Image: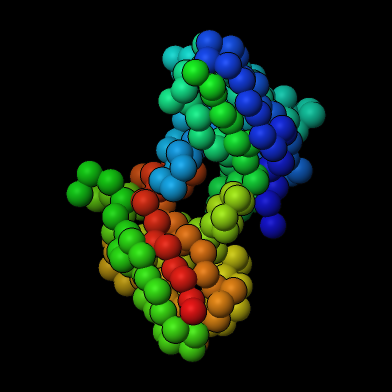
Length: 111
Length: 114
């Protein structure tokens, strides 16, 4: 079963705008990771945030984590057409040895 | 190699046949994971190895599915007596040691059962 639930399911924005995707999960976690998947290709790791961290930045990416609400958000600033992809959050549950993925958010950036 | 390598990239098989999917992880990576991904869905956990030990196989759908990693490096996922519902993308990932770091995914094997 999938623990992470992304919101929205699909998002369409203009190039240059910011994109925000949300993820909710159910159980306690060690960390939460975000992955990107371009059409028909492999999953690429974007960023990992640990359960004792609240915010993390990597280039144009900003991730927040609220363990009290069991939720995370991924912000992509100044989006580009090349950001068009599916974005998945994945949690590393505290009791388990696996990444549990959500169903993903499909982002389309129009140029 | 530089990344996780999976073979074959595409496999078409007849219902009832057995298939073996191979994963060659990044050299030195301790942990290896198998996932299955249906179109439009996120990856679904199948099984996990630490070195050669299969630590968790709770995601394997039934006893037709098995996996091994005999020398702690290359892994094989075997599906016996394939059924049409087994059709999916099968993805392998490896990480240096557990999940406190990122997992590196291969390009996957697209399995089609006809």
